[in-house]
Image (cartoon, rainbow, N blue to C red; front, side, top):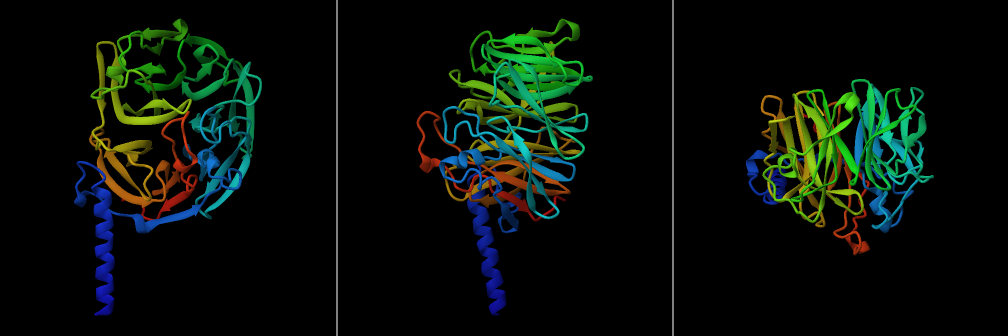
Length: 409
Protein backbone atom coordinates (compact mmCIF):
# COMPACT_ATOMS: atom_id res chain seq x y z
CA UNK A 1 0.00 0.00 0.00
CA UNK A 2 2.83 2.39 0.80
CA UNK A 3 4.43 1.95 -2.63
CA UNK A 4 1.09 2.38 -4.38
CA UNK A 5 0.35 5.51 -2.38
CA UNK A 6 3.82 6.92 -3.18
CA UNK A 7 3.36 6.21 -6.87
CA UNK A 8 -0.05 7.88 -6.77
CA UNK A 9 1.38 11.00 -5.14
CA UNK A 10 4.17 11.13 -7.73
CA UNK A 11 1.64 10.85 -10.53
CA UNK A 12 -0.57 13.55 -9.04
CA UNK A 13 2.45 15.83 -8.62
CA UNK A 14 3.42 15.45 -12.28
CA UNK A 15 -0.15 16.17 -13.35
CA UNK A 16 -0.27 19.33 -11.24
CA UNK A 17 3.08 20.53 -12.61
CA UNK A 18 1.80 19.85 -16.10
CA UNK A 19 -1.38 21.84 -15.44
CA UNK A 20 0.66 24.80 -14.21
CA UNK A 21 2.64 24.76 -17.43
CA UNK A 22 -0.41 24.28 -19.65
CA UNK A 23 -2.27 27.21 -18.20
CA UNK A 24 0.67 29.46 -19.16
CA UNK A 25 -0.29 28.79 -22.77
CA UNK A 26 -3.61 30.23 -23.84
CA UNK A 27 -5.48 27.89 -26.13
CA UNK A 28 -3.43 24.80 -25.23
CA UNK A 29 -5.46 22.23 -23.36
CA UNK A 30 -3.85 20.00 -20.76
CA UNK A 31 -4.46 16.70 -22.51
CA UNK A 32 -2.49 17.81 -25.58
CA UNK A 33 0.94 17.95 -23.95
CA UNK A 34 3.22 15.47 -22.26
CA UNK A 35 5.19 16.79 -19.30
CA UNK A 36 8.83 15.82 -19.71
CA UNK A 37 10.39 17.89 -16.93
CA UNK A 38 11.49 14.76 -15.08
CA UNK A 39 13.28 13.54 -18.23
CA UNK A 40 15.48 16.62 -18.64
CA UNK A 41 19.17 15.97 -17.93
CA UNK A 42 21.61 18.89 -17.32
CA UNK A 43 24.92 18.36 -19.13
CA UNK A 44 26.87 21.39 -17.93
CA UNK A 45 27.58 25.04 -18.69
CA UNK A 46 30.64 25.15 -20.94
CA UNK A 47 30.91 28.95 -21.15
CA UNK A 48 30.69 29.61 -17.41
CA UNK A 49 34.46 29.44 -16.90
CA UNK A 50 34.99 32.21 -19.47
CA UNK A 51 31.98 34.36 -18.55
CA UNK A 52 31.88 33.80 -14.80
CA UNK A 53 29.92 36.72 -13.31
CA UNK A 54 26.18 37.30 -13.28
CA UNK A 55 26.52 40.27 -15.65
CA UNK A 56 28.53 38.09 -18.02
CA UNK A 57 25.73 35.52 -18.00
CA UNK A 58 24.35 37.45 -20.98
CA UNK A 59 27.38 36.34 -23.00
CA UNK A 60 26.56 32.73 -22.07
CA UNK A 61 23.34 32.94 -24.10
CA UNK A 62 23.28 29.94 -26.43
CA UNK A 63 22.28 31.81 -29.55
CA UNK A 64 22.40 28.76 -31.79
CA UNK A 65 23.04 25.00 -31.80
CA UNK A 66 24.05 23.09 -34.93
CA UNK A 67 24.51 19.37 -35.51
CA UNK A 68 27.51 18.59 -37.69
CA UNK A 69 29.94 15.67 -37.93
CA UNK A 70 28.16 13.79 -35.09
CA UNK A 71 28.63 16.72 -32.72
CA UNK A 72 26.60 19.73 -31.62
CA UNK A 73 28.25 23.13 -32.07
CA UNK A 74 27.29 25.92 -29.65
CA UNK A 75 27.12 29.68 -30.19
CA UNK A 76 27.67 32.31 -27.46
CA UNK A 77 29.25 35.73 -26.78
CA UNK A 78 27.69 39.19 -27.13
CA UNK A 79 28.30 41.78 -29.83
CA UNK A 80 26.02 44.46 -28.37
CA UNK A 81 27.62 47.74 -27.43
CA UNK A 82 24.93 48.48 -24.85
CA UNK A 83 23.77 45.53 -22.81
CA UNK A 84 25.38 43.33 -20.16
CA UNK A 85 28.74 41.77 -21.04
CA UNK A 86 29.06 44.06 -24.06
CA UNK A 87 31.62 43.22 -26.76
CA UNK A 88 32.39 39.83 -25.24
CA UNK A 89 34.84 38.41 -27.77
CA UNK A 90 36.91 36.57 -28.70
CA UNK A 91 34.51 33.62 -28.31
CA UNK A 92 35.45 29.95 -27.99
CA UNK A 93 33.99 27.51 -30.50
CA UNK A 94 32.51 24.93 -28.12
CA UNK A 95 31.50 21.46 -29.27
CA UNK A 96 29.31 18.96 -27.43
CA UNK A 97 29.90 15.26 -28.08
CA UNK A 98 26.45 13.69 -27.55
CA UNK A 99 27.99 10.24 -27.09
CA UNK A 100 30.09 11.25 -24.07
CA UNK A 101 28.40 14.50 -22.96
CA UNK A 102 31.86 16.12 -23.03
CA UNK A 103 32.50 19.70 -24.14
CA UNK A 104 35.64 20.63 -26.08
CA UNK A 105 36.93 23.81 -27.68
CA UNK A 106 38.00 23.96 -31.33
CA UNK A 107 39.52 27.43 -31.15
CA UNK A 108 38.39 31.06 -30.93
CA UNK A 109 36.61 33.41 -33.29
CA UNK A 110 38.02 36.93 -33.53
CA UNK A 111 34.50 38.35 -33.27
CA UNK A 112 32.43 39.54 -30.31
CA UNK A 113 29.77 36.86 -30.78
CA UNK A 114 29.07 33.57 -32.50
CA UNK A 115 25.50 34.23 -33.55
CA UNK A 116 24.87 31.29 -35.86
CA UNK A 117 26.32 28.35 -37.73
CA UNK A 118 25.40 27.45 -41.28
CA UNK A 119 26.08 24.38 -43.41
CA UNK A 120 26.95 25.24 -47.01
CA UNK A 121 27.94 22.59 -49.53
CA UNK A 122 28.43 20.07 -46.69
CA UNK A 123 30.85 22.36 -44.84
CA UNK A 124 30.28 24.21 -41.56
CA UNK A 125 30.62 28.01 -41.50
CA UNK A 126 30.41 30.79 -38.91
CA UNK A 127 29.51 34.27 -40.23
CA UNK A 128 31.70 36.86 -38.50
CA UNK A 129 29.09 38.70 -36.44
CA UNK A 130 31.26 41.59 -35.20
CA UNK A 131 35.02 41.52 -35.95
CA UNK A 132 37.50 42.75 -33.37
CA UNK A 133 39.80 44.00 -36.11
CA UNK A 134 39.89 46.75 -38.72
CA UNK A 135 36.43 47.21 -40.21
CA UNK A 136 37.71 47.46 -43.78
CA UNK A 137 37.19 43.69 -44.04
CA UNK A 138 34.79 41.27 -42.42
CA UNK A 139 35.20 37.65 -41.39
CA UNK A 140 33.79 34.25 -41.84
CA UNK A 141 35.11 30.95 -40.54
CA UNK A 142 35.14 27.55 -42.24
CA UNK A 143 35.66 24.23 -40.48
CA UNK A 144 38.24 22.04 -42.19
CA UNK A 145 38.18 18.24 -42.44
CA UNK A 146 40.88 18.11 -39.75
CA UNK A 147 38.45 19.61 -37.21
CA UNK A 148 40.30 22.92 -37.21
CA UNK A 149 38.89 26.26 -38.28
CA UNK A 150 40.16 28.69 -40.89
CA UNK A 151 39.40 32.38 -40.57
CA UNK A 152 38.78 33.98 -43.96
CA UNK A 153 38.94 37.75 -44.01
CA UNK A 154 37.91 38.80 -47.51
CA UNK A 155 34.50 40.52 -47.31
CA UNK A 156 34.84 44.28 -47.93
CA UNK A 157 33.35 46.74 -45.41
CA UNK A 158 31.65 43.96 -43.43
CA UNK A 159 31.19 45.53 -40.02
CA UNK A 160 28.68 42.70 -39.39
CA UNK A 161 28.25 39.47 -41.34
CA UNK A 162 24.77 38.40 -40.23
CA UNK A 163 24.03 35.48 -42.54
CA UNK A 164 25.49 33.43 -45.39
CA UNK A 165 23.69 31.33 -48.00
CA UNK A 166 24.61 29.37 -51.09
CA UNK A 167 22.44 29.81 -54.19
CA UNK A 168 23.35 28.07 -57.48
CA UNK A 169 27.04 27.77 -56.52
CA UNK A 170 27.21 31.47 -55.56
CA UNK A 171 27.89 32.60 -51.98
CA UNK A 172 25.97 35.53 -50.49
CA UNK A 173 26.60 37.36 -47.22
CA UNK A 174 24.09 39.65 -45.48
CA UNK A 175 25.97 42.62 -44.06
CA UNK A 176 25.81 45.57 -41.76
CA UNK A 177 28.19 48.26 -42.99
CA UNK A 178 29.03 51.75 -41.69
CA UNK A 179 26.41 53.39 -43.92
CA UNK A 180 23.67 50.79 -43.45
CA UNK A 181 23.50 47.38 -45.07
CA UNK A 182 24.80 45.46 -48.06
CA UNK A 183 24.92 42.07 -49.73
CA UNK A 184 28.29 40.66 -50.75
CA UNK A 185 28.48 38.09 -53.54
CA UNK A 186 31.26 35.59 -54.27
CA UNK A 187 31.54 33.48 -57.41
CA UNK A 188 34.73 31.70 -56.26
CA UNK A 189 33.75 30.06 -52.95
CA UNK A 190 34.54 33.12 -50.86
CA UNK A 191 38.06 33.95 -52.05
CA UNK A 192 36.89 37.34 -53.31
CA UNK A 193 33.64 39.25 -52.92
CA UNK A 194 31.79 42.00 -54.76
CA UNK A 195 29.16 44.26 -53.22
CA UNK A 196 25.93 43.74 -55.15
CA UNK A 197 23.54 45.80 -53.03
CA UNK A 198 23.84 48.74 -50.63
CA UNK A 199 20.87 49.85 -48.53
CA UNK A 200 20.15 52.40 -45.81
CA UNK A 201 19.24 49.59 -43.36
CA UNK A 202 21.20 46.53 -42.31
CA UNK A 203 20.56 43.29 -44.21
CA UNK A 204 19.81 40.73 -41.51
CA UNK A 205 19.03 37.63 -43.53
CA UNK A 206 17.82 35.83 -46.64
CA UNK A 207 14.80 33.88 -47.74
CA UNK A 208 15.30 31.12 -50.32
CA UNK A 209 12.15 29.93 -52.04
CA UNK A 210 11.53 28.16 -55.37
CA UNK A 211 15.13 28.75 -56.45
CA UNK A 212 14.80 32.48 -55.82
CA UNK A 213 16.86 34.48 -53.30
CA UNK A 214 15.48 37.41 -51.32
CA UNK A 215 17.55 39.76 -49.15
CA UNK A 216 15.57 41.05 -46.16
CA UNK A 217 16.76 44.22 -44.51
CA UNK A 218 15.65 45.94 -41.34
CA UNK A 219 11.99 46.93 -41.81
CA UNK A 220 9.54 49.21 -40.02
CA UNK A 221 5.98 48.16 -39.28
CA UNK A 222 3.88 50.68 -41.20
CA UNK A 223 6.41 52.98 -42.81
CA UNK A 224 6.66 53.67 -46.52
CA UNK A 225 9.76 52.71 -48.51
CA UNK A 226 10.15 49.38 -46.74
CA UNK A 227 11.83 47.18 -49.29
CA UNK A 228 13.14 43.68 -49.62
CA UNK A 229 15.15 42.65 -52.63
CA UNK A 230 15.09 39.77 -55.12
CA UNK A 231 18.28 38.56 -56.77
CA UNK A 232 18.11 38.66 -60.57
CA UNK A 233 21.51 37.26 -61.55
CA UNK A 234 23.49 39.65 -63.72
CA UNK A 235 21.02 42.44 -62.90
CA UNK A 236 21.81 42.11 -59.21
CA UNK A 237 19.19 42.74 -56.52
CA UNK A 238 15.97 44.46 -57.56
CA UNK A 239 13.45 46.13 -55.26
CA UNK A 240 10.32 44.13 -54.44
CA UNK A 241 8.17 46.93 -53.07
CA UNK A 242 5.12 44.66 -53.22
CA UNK A 243 6.51 42.50 -50.39
CA UNK A 244 5.61 44.87 -47.58
CA UNK A 245 6.04 44.17 -43.85
CA UNK A 246 2.31 43.50 -43.64
CA UNK A 247 2.65 40.77 -46.28
CA UNK A 248 5.85 39.32 -44.84
CA UNK A 249 4.36 39.24 -41.32
CA UNK A 250 0.59 38.87 -41.93
CA UNK A 251 -2.10 38.78 -39.25
CA UNK A 252 0.23 40.68 -36.91
CA UNK A 253 0.01 44.06 -35.21
CA UNK A 254 3.43 45.52 -35.95
CA UNK A 255 5.07 48.25 -33.91
CA UNK A 256 5.90 51.01 -36.41
CA UNK A 257 8.53 52.43 -34.06
CA UNK A 258 10.63 49.27 -33.97
CA UNK A 259 12.93 47.76 -36.56
CA UNK A 260 11.90 44.27 -37.70
CA UNK A 261 14.03 41.46 -39.02
CA UNK A 262 13.72 37.79 -39.90
CA UNK A 263 15.61 34.98 -38.19
CA UNK A 264 15.89 31.18 -38.24
CA UNK A 265 14.65 30.87 -41.84
CA UNK A 266 14.38 27.16 -42.70
CA UNK A 267 13.22 25.42 -45.88
CA UNK A 268 10.27 23.08 -45.32
CA UNK A 269 8.23 21.23 -47.94
CA UNK A 270 8.59 23.73 -50.82
CA UNK A 271 8.03 26.58 -48.37
CA UNK A 272 10.17 28.53 -45.91
CA UNK A 273 9.45 29.00 -42.21
CA UNK A 274 10.93 31.97 -40.35
CA UNK A 275 10.63 33.94 -37.13
CA UNK A 276 9.71 37.62 -37.16
CA UNK A 277 11.57 39.62 -34.53
CA UNK A 278 12.18 43.19 -33.44
CA UNK A 279 15.81 44.21 -33.19
CA UNK A 280 16.73 44.36 -29.52
CA UNK A 281 19.82 45.28 -27.53
CA UNK A 282 21.66 46.60 -30.58
CA UNK A 283 21.11 43.77 -33.08
CA UNK A 284 19.87 40.85 -31.02
CA UNK A 285 16.32 39.54 -31.52
CA UNK A 286 13.01 39.96 -29.72
CA UNK A 287 10.73 37.44 -31.50
CA UNK A 288 7.01 38.12 -32.00
CA UNK A 289 5.76 35.41 -34.40
CA UNK A 290 6.42 32.54 -36.79
CA UNK A 291 5.48 32.60 -40.47
CA UNK A 292 5.48 30.29 -43.46
CA UNK A 293 5.94 31.59 -47.02
CA UNK A 294 4.63 29.41 -49.85
CA UNK A 295 5.29 31.92 -52.62
CA UNK A 296 6.88 35.36 -52.94
CA UNK A 297 6.30 35.60 -56.68
CA UNK A 298 4.80 38.84 -58.03
CA UNK A 299 0.98 38.79 -57.88
CA UNK A 300 1.16 35.51 -55.97
CA UNK A 301 2.56 36.39 -52.54
CA UNK A 302 1.34 33.69 -50.17
CA UNK A 303 2.49 34.00 -46.56
CA UNK A 304 0.63 32.70 -43.50
CA UNK A 305 1.15 33.23 -39.80
CA UNK A 306 1.66 30.03 -37.81
CA UNK A 307 -1.16 29.83 -35.28
CA UNK A 308 0.51 29.63 -31.86
CA UNK A 309 -0.79 30.75 -28.44
CA UNK A 310 -0.54 34.49 -27.87
CA UNK A 311 1.40 34.43 -24.62
CA UNK A 312 4.49 32.56 -25.79
CA UNK A 313 7.79 33.56 -27.41
CA UNK A 314 9.09 31.50 -30.36
CA UNK A 315 12.87 31.12 -30.20
CA UNK A 316 14.07 28.50 -32.65
CA UNK A 317 13.06 26.18 -35.50
CA UNK A 318 14.38 22.69 -36.29
CA UNK A 319 13.57 20.79 -39.49
CA UNK A 320 13.97 17.02 -39.32
CA UNK A 321 13.02 15.31 -42.57
CA UNK A 322 9.24 15.54 -42.91
CA UNK A 323 8.83 17.13 -39.48
CA UNK A 324 9.21 20.69 -38.23
CA UNK A 325 9.55 21.75 -34.59
CA UNK A 326 9.25 25.21 -33.02
CA UNK A 327 10.78 25.93 -29.60
CA UNK A 328 8.80 28.37 -27.46
CA UNK A 329 8.68 29.63 -23.89
CA UNK A 330 6.14 31.43 -21.74
CA UNK A 331 6.38 35.19 -22.20
CA UNK A 332 7.24 35.71 -18.55
CA UNK A 333 10.82 34.56 -19.02
CA UNK A 334 11.86 36.15 -15.73
CA UNK A 335 9.93 33.65 -13.65
CA UNK A 336 11.70 30.61 -12.20
CA UNK A 337 11.29 27.97 -13.44
CA UNK A 338 10.24 28.80 -17.01
CA UNK A 339 7.76 26.75 -19.03
CA UNK A 340 9.06 25.63 -22.43
CA UNK A 341 6.92 23.97 -25.10
CA UNK A 342 7.83 22.42 -28.47
CA UNK A 343 5.25 22.59 -31.26
CA UNK A 344 5.27 20.11 -34.14
CA UNK A 345 3.99 19.91 -37.72
CA UNK A 346 4.52 17.58 -40.68
CA UNK A 347 4.82 18.15 -44.41
CA UNK A 348 1.25 16.87 -44.80
CA UNK A 349 -0.02 19.96 -42.99
CA UNK A 350 2.93 22.35 -42.68
CA UNK A 351 0.88 25.26 -41.38
CA UNK A 352 -0.75 23.35 -38.51
CA UNK A 353 1.61 23.18 -35.54
CA UNK A 354 0.37 21.29 -32.52
CA UNK A 355 1.85 21.21 -28.99
CA UNK A 356 4.21 18.26 -28.81
CA UNK A 357 6.07 18.21 -25.50
CA UNK A 358 6.75 20.52 -22.55
CA UNK A 359 9.25 20.89 -19.76
CA UNK A 360 10.24 23.40 -17.12
CA UNK A 361 13.79 24.69 -16.74
CA UNK A 362 15.70 27.19 -14.61
CA UNK A 363 15.62 29.64 -17.53
CA UNK A 364 14.06 29.74 -20.98
CA UNK A 365 15.49 27.59 -23.79
CA UNK A 366 16.70 29.98 -26.48
CA UNK A 367 17.96 27.34 -28.93
CA UNK A 368 17.64 23.61 -29.54
CA UNK A 369 18.81 20.80 -31.80
CA UNK A 370 17.78 17.25 -32.62
CA UNK A 371 20.46 14.55 -32.77
CA UNK A 372 19.60 10.88 -33.27
CA UNK A 373 15.98 11.66 -32.39
CA UNK A 374 16.92 13.29 -29.06
CA UNK A 375 16.44 16.99 -28.27
CA UNK A 376 19.21 19.16 -26.78
CA UNK A 377 18.61 22.68 -25.45
CA UNK A 378 20.67 25.77 -24.72
CA UNK A 379 19.34 28.12 -22.04
CA UNK A 380 19.37 31.89 -22.33
CA UNK A 381 18.75 35.09 -20.42
CA UNK A 382 17.38 38.47 -21.43
CA UNK A 383 16.99 42.10 -20.42
CA UNK A 384 13.97 44.34 -20.98
CA UNK A 385 15.80 47.50 -22.08
CA UNK A 386 19.34 47.66 -23.43
CA UNK A 387 19.96 51.17 -22.12
CA UNK A 388 18.25 50.68 -18.76
CA UNK A 389 18.96 47.20 -17.44
CA UNK A 390 19.75 45.78 -14.05
CA UNK A 391 21.94 42.79 -13.32
CA UNK A 392 19.11 41.33 -11.24
CA UNK A 393 17.22 40.66 -14.50
CA UNK A 394 19.83 38.14 -15.58
CA UNK A 395 19.56 34.42 -14.98
CA UNK A 396 22.62 32.59 -13.70
CA UNK A 397 21.55 29.45 -15.59
CA UNK A 398 22.13 31.04 -18.99
CA UNK A 399 24.40 28.73 -20.96
CA UNK A 400 23.17 25.52 -19.32
CA UNK A 401 22.93 22.69 -21.84
CA UNK A 402 20.09 20.22 -21.36
CA UNK A 403 19.23 16.85 -22.87
CA UNK A 404 15.73 15.46 -23.09
CA UNK A 405 15.95 11.75 -22.39
CA UNK A 406 12.87 10.90 -24.42
CA UNK A 407 13.45 10.19 -28.14
CA UNK A 408 10.89 11.56 -30.56
CA UNK A 409 8.33 9.08 -31.81
